[in-house]
Amino acid sequence: MTARPSGSGEARAYPRISVVTPSFNQGPFLERTIRSVLDEHYPDLEYIVIDGGSTDGSVETIKRYERHLAYWVSEPDAGQSNAINKGLNRATGTILTWLNSDDYYTPGALEIVATAALAHPEAGAYVGAGDIVDASGAVIHHHVPSSVISLETMYQWIRGEFFMQPSCFFRDTAWRAVAPIDESIHIAFDLDLWMRMAKAGQTFVTIDRLLSKSLAHPAAKTTAYTNLSIVDVAVVAIRHGGERVVRQHLDDMAIRLSWSEPNLEKILNNPVLRWLEPLISLFVKPAIRRRDTVPPWLRR
Image 1 (tube, rainbow, N blue to C red):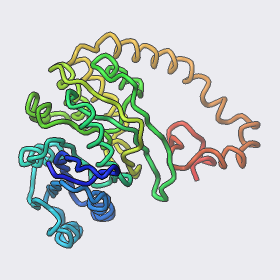
Image 2: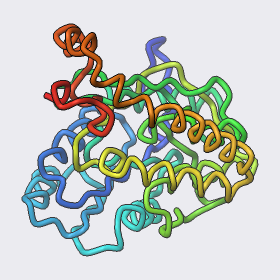
Image 3: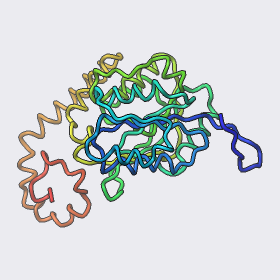
Image 4: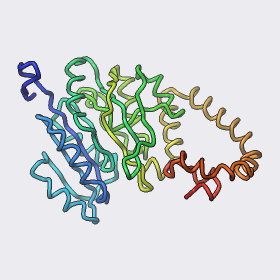
């Protein structure tokens, strides 16, 4: 821990926080991610960057900041989860997390987490709010974690009731109890990790503060593989005892689909809807217009 003066004039011990950034050919976004971590000016930061052998200028970006990094490497790996495992296995912090190379922290996020960790040393993880934003920084979705996070509440991820991974930090003891990340899971490996922590008796403390922002762009895994994300979450939830919740959600989806299939074309081609086009376009952001469910004149 590092001592830092508090506002009251007393020295305050800050836990070491280790942040791992996995990256592969994310040059357009990587520098903002790195800067967001370093600009926290957290007094006991261990920052690790694991690059998968990028060829798009990412390595040059990393080298510009290497004197601020505890460790970095650029070499072929087995994917995102493998890179995260490599980084977390090197981490020496009391509090651990990873920050993907298209995500970034809000100012003061690490200090907020440290304060929560000091106030709740019994907890295994700390979760704050997070935003999904577009390229301009406009908020598409604001996600606030449930006041109670448990294995049962995590079953509801299949219904979209989730928390943001970059806003989740966990203790080294919680990590060691369940490590490593399951590299066979393509997308929902974070959910699998949280569920294993919960099953191991780790408690989650929620923080009523915005900690991170995630950029929605076509190459982002959760954007490019939306349907696969749902499948991954379902498989992980079933693996950890959530079959009833998953089955109920799939039944609900089937009921909605049985109604929408014969009616969707009628709705989208309704003259009234076309007449409302200018008004709809003002309120429906391009980044969240589902291309498979809206007519072409709303896709611009």
